Amino acid sequence: MHRILVSDSLSEQGLDVLKSDAGCEVVYRPGLGEAELCEAIKGVDALVIRSGAKVTARVLESADKLKIIGRAGIGVDNVDVPAASKRGIVVMNTPTGNAVTTAEHSLSLLFSLARHIPQATATMKAGKWEKKKFEGVELAGKTLGVIGLGTIGRLVAERAQGLKMRVVAFDPVLTQDRAAALGIELVALEQVFRDADAITVHTPLTPETRGLINDAVVPNLKKGVLLVNCARGGIYDEGAVLRGLESGHIGGAAFDVFVEEPPPADHPLIQHERVICSPHLGASTAEAQVRVAVQIAEQTLAFLRTGEVKNAVNVPSLSGDAAKSVAPWVTLAQRLGRFLAQVEQLAPKGLEIECFGDAGNHGVDLVGSAAVAGYLQHFLDFPVNSVAAPHLATDRGITVKRLRSTGVRGAYASQVVVRIIGEAGEERIASGTLGSDGTPRLVSWGAFDIEARLGGTALVVSSLDRPGVIGFIGTVLGESEINVASVHLGKSSEGNALSIWNLDDAAPTAVLDKVRASPNVVRAIAIGL
Image 1 (cartoon, rainbow, N blue to C red):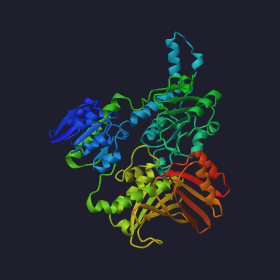
Image 2: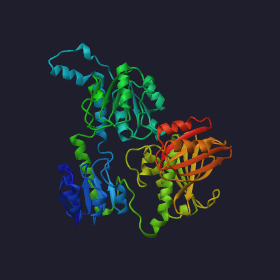
Image 3: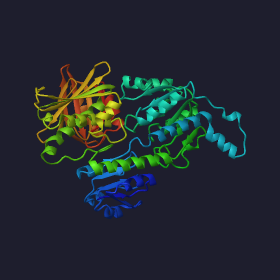
Image 4: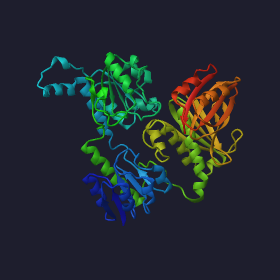
């Protein structure tokens, strides 16, 4: 008999699915605090939650039998996933359950912007009849720019096409072939800004997407553009949008999400007459809540019955000698993928992972998939593991090859080599090995040979090979009170230099600007591994 604890409110349909299994005892106790959950979780095989329960390390320490945590919804920020992974507990979510609801909300906001529906409703309720004031625009024949073509972005694009809109889109990890198969015109981000009559974003909030539309971008937008954000607060620079509205360059904006939630009542965007907003309602429909509840109930039962893993956000722990052997190579591969995602700007047609020596002795598939997961994680707003990564890549039209080589490459007998293959066959390559202490090391990137620690936060600088460059960078970091844990140097065959600075704290934009100001610096990038 499996014991399932449901510690958040769940739809009756979801509960009915769990109760339908005669081999399970369902305990329904929504609203438990941390201390109560620590007690209730003892002797439990599965925990089903939504966003309310906080599954902390303390809670997990009390979980003496727990095998699976099922989250009805996409976000798992209320679960200590690393602590769960260390205890061998599988964490699953339902990443697509809210997709239709969020896509529909995005289009609802767009319609409301185009026809001034909230403003017209408010005046009617105030006893006014201001027909001429609220003349709108048709969406048919207009160009919709979609930034981010994950599940939600694709649904929005599909529905916009049904409205006879032209859809142009930008996604850094979707191939032209895959976009064409979806009937979507994949273009550069600058063309989206230039061509779109309306723009909607469906991306995670990352350093690259934070302030995606800012003061520098607003003048390049089509005059009168409509902006919609149902993704993450901060993707649009709120101040820049306000200034664009006041200047008249932006025709209107709709926000379901904000940098600060809830935003202050006197937030100037909320008060602006050409802004419509909602309190983070993207996933809030009765259908979506039923859907995610039923999905997580079915996934939980399948795992308890047969061990089937679906939509896991962590990789189940390995045990014994196999874990000791393969885990360091998995970590290395994941960080190589994440490194390339941040230092290269090549749209991938394929990813190729080649294992040499010991790196290929304990599961080329697992090591290769870890590299893919590391690469994709940088672009996605939900955890990506080695199980899901190849499927996510295929869904985006990216081919994945995982190879084992018996030869020797360069000075290191055991290596992991990760290649990004572009649309025209161009390659971007990074390779790594394990240091004597078993930690991941970068040993080459493109034309550079180097041995650098792959971990934490770092500053990657390519420069001219001239005296004083390293001293200049060190001085900038020192004056900015950023401590340098280590620095690693390398040179290319062409005579250029590479330095990788492992830092105790991330380098802010102002520091990067100072480094980039040197005529000897070709490129400077802050990365996190």
